[in-house]
Length: 163
Image (cartoon, rainbow, N blue to C red; front, side):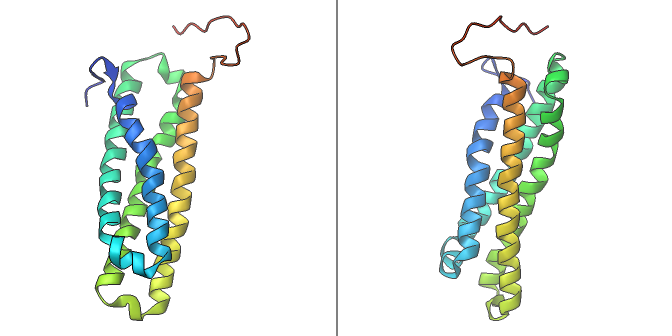
């Protein structure tokens, strides 16, 4: 994975797709899991979107690792962000698996088995909610690593110099 594209870190370019897409796919999975009619109508599109977001998350993770290894000054600042970021693809993957399971249930005739449908839908809702929380945690730790020493309140402060 290249460290830079067009002079900007690849991780920074990719993370915007992840920051927007992960919560969106989690919310759409919650909606598809909550409404059987939406499951039949939008389930396949949601499952495809979830699979795409696994790829986007993985690419963002690879670019982040390349940036972390390339810029040694980041290794102290972004250690927590890196450790949290390494786990995010697993959360998004779990959402994708459950989005696919919702489609299988709707299409393969498992809808008659009410307990199975309710269990998978409840798991999809719970995992999606947890994934949103993990996405926020990863993003917050990255923002703190980058912007933690910068005062945006307008009060005078000595500039932060990175080695």
